[in-house]
Length: 308
Image 1: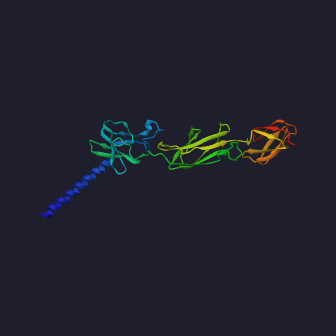
Image 2 (image 1 turned 45 degrees about the vertical axis):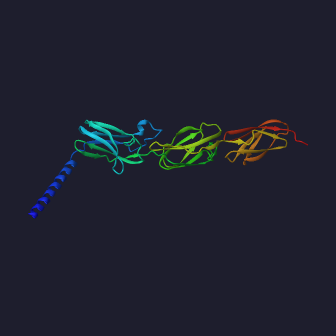
């Protein structure tokens, strides 16, 4: 009797296993009730720089037939954090739902990866979407240093631009500000790179540069400091010289090796940034011009009688 019962039990188990296998295989052969899935892979629920629709993750798919569905969001451990992003009876068409990155309590979920789970209520069947949704609400960290704070965009290959070398904590776009005004976002988003500023369209003078970082989710981290730079082509140390001797000592700020000077009909080329030139014998007011690559600096020279 015991042996007969055991045989019946084993037979029952074999039948149940075979039935389950057959059902599983039949489900595999059936077309999925969902097709054309489109899911946003990355977004920030708190992005202040983004449009409202960019602060949500879009979950879209096509139903092959009318279904009673419930769309939930689960974390990486499989725990449902938001129920009923979409729920109800939906027809055979393309449907779009949006998740705002919040849980059932209305709080923004922690940064991480999440999945959408579609339950077919009448069939008591769950469809898992393979695409993950990444929530990123944290701005990137940013470190910046600068090269060529004094520069001359004259095309001579010496300090033609300001280099802002940066390191971001994640892939992000760089955003340049000049005197507090946004100048544009970079095309690339490498975490370590250099942003260059040539000062095109700006007159000589001092400017404040700052660099911000915008990650791929849209979060923006402003630079924590501004850098003062000076755009100059050629400058004289003084705008007015008073001379009582026979020569004038001139100091020039420029990044080229050779400069040309002209004073009272005389001139020449010098190879130093500090040099002496002869002045007119007659007292009076004269114009000194020092130039390089078509750029000029001018100063007034007043020649007075030497004291005896």
